[in-house]
Length: 296
Image (cartoon, rainbow, N blue to C red; front, side, top):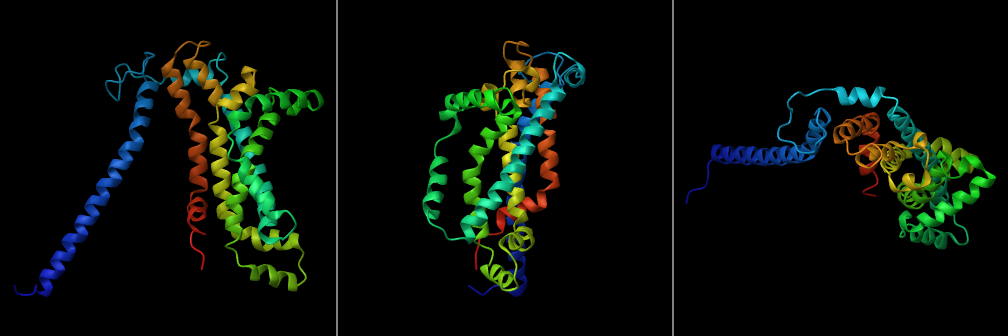
């Protein structure tokens, strides 16, 4: 069989490239469709004047935005307060986690002290047990602590933040330590030779290099606490102290009966803060998930 001519080889290569592009686009389209389909169903329910989860068409008959107006204006539903409570609790938790884990991970990565390995293993071991196993103990701790420090007791956002900090510190310390280990130690040594202190080295030299991983930890912590239901439901008892996850659960429970259309409208509006946050830190988030994957 005669060898293919250069033009034939070029044509075959172009067909192969077009085939590769075609199947990649097909996979991307299916992934987007898979991701957006539940959102479309929720949107359809949110504009449905009838409280029903049965969707026969994306745009239902007599579609209306009345559910959104009710959620934002009806004094019976303090939805805007719930949104603010969630943003406040999640934002403060994420800020404290980033601040504390950055210092802890720097110590574990750069300093050598007695008990360092044992502490690292203990931190990792604690993460094996989920918070759900300690709900009763956490409840009693906040109940006792509230008698001494009221703003850290039950039905307080301070106490809820304290619990979230305990659950997020361990894993994030390990994650950030691995990122610190990818930063060359020669930078520290050069700074020390110039007379810089450990704090100056950390704040002025190392800290700017780890901003991507800080963005990753911030967004992951924010999302995990923003969407948490169990701990917030147990620790918060006042309707006006609820986070949005707990507040929205009332629409599919007994207090407001099962009003799925209002629940769907609230769920879509509650998702906006995380979408905005993703948009603001998307560049740092992408680099934080990839930088440090390889170490030369």
